[in-house]
Picture 1 (cartoon, rainbow, N blue to C red):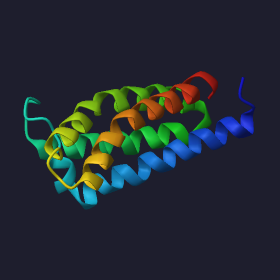
Picture 2 (picture 1 turned 180 degrees about the vertical axis):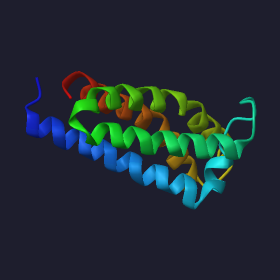
Picture 3 (picture 1 turned 30 degrees about the horizontal axis):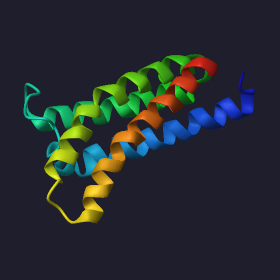
Picture 4 (picture 1 turned 180 degrees about the horizontal axis):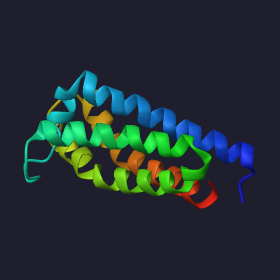
Length: 125
């Protein structure tokens, strides 16, 4: 089992990542709008703002020790839920310069690492 200070640092690191991402959804929503899969019902902007809000709420859950495990579970659900947007991004960027293709494709396995990270928080708080 992870020791408490390490578990706390892990959770706070994930909370920081989610806070930055959540804020960006509101500051510059257009890039996020562009990768919402067209099959998702409703407007892309709705999903951009909803996922940004979910990231911010999840970050708060991760910071509070009493809700940290729930925050880990919420983060896992969030990372799985937004994976189709990462697939959509890779598809849309398939004809961009190689560097940008690498970024979009690199996000796919990164999502798996984020799920592993959030599951570690969920298990060890």
